Amino acid sequence: MNLVDLIGNTPLLPLPAIPDRPRIELWGKCEFMNPGGSVKDRPALQMIRHAIASGQLTHEHILIDATSGNTGIAYAMIGAALGYRIALVMPENVSAARQQIARAFGTELIFSSPLEGSDGAIRRVREIVAEAPKRYFYPDQYSNESNPLAHYLGTGAEILATLGDRITHFIAGIGTSGTVMGTGRRLKEHRRAIRVIAVEPDDALHGLEGLKHMPTSLVPAIWRPEECVDEILPMATEEAWNAAECLSHQAGLLIGHSAGAAVAGAHRIAARLPPRETACIVCILPDRGERYLTLSRRE
Amino acid sequence: MATVRIPTSLRKLTQGKEEVQASGATIGEVIASLESSYPGIRARICDESGALRRFVNLFVSAEDIRFLKNLETPVQESDEISIVPAIAGGQC
Image (tube, rainbow over all chains, first blue to last red; front, side, top):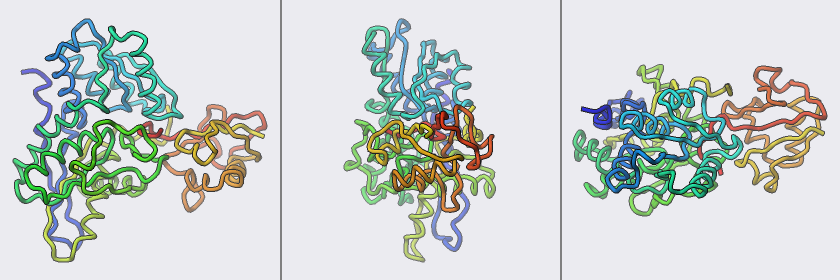
């Protein structure tokens, strides 16, 4: 057994009931239980496995990608576990804790401008790869079909195995969009009526690390919402942060802000349903809250 | 006039400018000056009560104003002020 065999098959946990709505079940898919601490272990492993199988990644290459954190930690951990060299390009304002975790795995870090966000990191990695294309393997998580595939094969199938026909709604934040696209496709194949909802920040300037405000971002090639997304829900940073704080107080679940965004989205969807309607809503909880505790400080 | 560096996520409001000039003896006054030149910018960086939003950081010559005097932090003519999102995801 290898460390990477622990990726996936995460628990689905019942979340505190919504007040006055006993007929609505709310579940959280605990992606923070992956060994790298986030949902990103799944696409990182799928992309690396595919690249090894197709000969794009060998022990002579350096895997390089742009990442605001969790994907980088996943690459770093999997690279160390399987013996591949990793380099990560990230905006300088990625939290200190995340930088330190990636470094702990022996990964090289390259910084891009803190003013340009993750898109600045994407542009920087493209420049680096263009200068020495043979030296690097660039998975490009924003365009790599293995990213949603990991969720089609894993996350979506696991949710169906646990809840089957009960699930009525699925909610996840949009970063690369891999989670919502891959899981959404799998759920829609099972039953078209399952509503797939993508949560995005309500403004270009936001505090939901890992999520993208699509109207002002480089749009990922894998983001094709017409295939399986029923609704895009804009989310205010404060509302998502409050939902995350509430869950840590009420349920002992110290979750990250993108998880808070999904849970806040679930509460909004629930509030819209007729009073006596039954529903079974599943939210993705991408990572733990520890990674954001120093967010108000730049270290 | 102090120089203010604008993150990409707010450049729509500054006609694409990466740096703008603003007057004021404190950060609070600089924000008011920015708002008069670029209407709408204050609401993006400050909440309804006027406090800096939790996910926005302001630096005066590399010092975080939360560790100085917050919106009362004095500003010199030669200072460079940076508005930096507290997180790194997503903005173009």
